[in-house]
Amino acid sequence: MSALRLEDVTLGYDRHPAVHHLDGAVAPGALLAVVGPNGAGKSTLLKGLVGAIEPLGGRIDRGALGPRDIAYLPQAAELDRSFPIDVFDLVATGLWRRAGLFGGVGRADRARVAEAIAGVGLTGFERRAIGTLSGGQLQRALFARLLLQDASVILLDEPFAAIDAKTVEDLLALVARWHSERRTVIAVLHDIDMVRRAFPETLLLARRAVAWGPTTEALKPERLLEARAMTEAFDDAAPFCSANAA
Amino acid sequence: MTLYDALVGPFAEFAFMRRALVGALALSLGAAPIGVFLMLRRMSLTGDAMAHAILPGAAVGFLVAGLSLPAMTLGGLVAGVSVALLTGLVARTTVLKEDAALASFYLLSLALGVTLVSLKGSNVDLLHVLFGSVLALDDQAMLLLAGVASVTLVALALIYRPLVLECVDPGFLRSVSRAGGPVHFIFLGLVVLNLVAGFQALGTLLAVGVMMLPAAAARFWSNALTPMFAVAILVASLASVAGLLVSYHFDLPTGPAIILSAGVLYLVSVAVGWSGGVLWRLAPPRHHRAA
Image (spheres, each protein chain N blue to C red):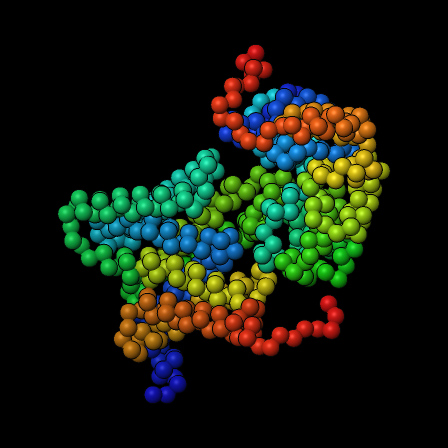
């Protein structure tokens, strides 16, 4: 299995970097939390890793990992919950890697979908429209889709935002299971205590990497203060980054 | 007047009524599912804007070659596809959102078309283009309508998965496939194609009605996608038959009669549709003992 390698990566929009000059590698099987203030570039980093946006500079080396080896859970807000689709069909989109645009979905696949739904405790909800689910139930369904994707790298963007404690506990258990299966898991999180408890590695982000390493090191109080001092507003008058010119 | 005279007679007696029926049903088959997707993607007004965009193209074709179906179809297609492509390009590469980009380009297209028509100094009767001629469908027009309906259904079947996923969860689609962009353009192409086919039968502006009214009506009868398509096609077909009969018996213009029929079905759906109809909201609220 390959590592995800970042070489001087800058990601952003309209020439404004959301996060710049990232260097480092995520080892296969790592369980990495990405932490930082609002606007630190956490979601942007995940979008870059999955290939949804191209870097403004630098290179992301995915080794032998193809796009379908990387599963991605976007922030909940990106999902249109009013769309008439039921839990089974939503979870079944996780078969994309195997079925693609035109491939059939046979009896064995249906059994796998049902199994994934059972794995997140949603049995009985198969035919419920996603609009009728609670936030926690919807997140369970999306985790079932991740189970089905069976990817070696799993990216989670704020998977536990506004979710009840019981669901968080169940879903964290899934994350731990993925970790024990030697999958790479990278999660954007806000709950520092949870990170300290469950994530051995942390990347503290504030437009740049403030710290990247073992969680106890990365989340020292002085580091957190440093990250908090980051300015959130775009500064149009900011000089172009000198490292670019070099 | 017997029931036979009222409902079957006109079609049995007149070939032009039969042709109109087949043409309108073919249009219903393709345009209604497209409308459902437009509605679900919150692009209900896109059809209307697109209709404005293809109008000048069709008019220019009319001016160049007279009342020639190929020329007007081609003109409409070129204008519609250009506006769709430019809109997509601006929406996906700049800060402007799709609705604003579309508004800009369809207005440009419309103004350009009106200018071209006036340059020609002709006061030709463009009412044909505006309000269609479903009672005068020739073989060519029938083939066009049937062909477009077939292409639409086959194409929708092929792009169904990514199209649905782009509506529900675009972030996820981007992570598993690069099909999102091309699929969106194919979909817009189908919208243009159906409007171009529709202006033969109903006129450019009314073609939007057969697309959107049945879709909006269908939303009140089901919470699932597949039944929604079925209901939309059914409503469009019913409206076609009813509109043709009303227009025959009361000597009314056919295109508007079909759209008004669809409008009646829409209003009925809003009122009594069992998936969100107004009537059920007025009923005293009751709920189950348990979830």
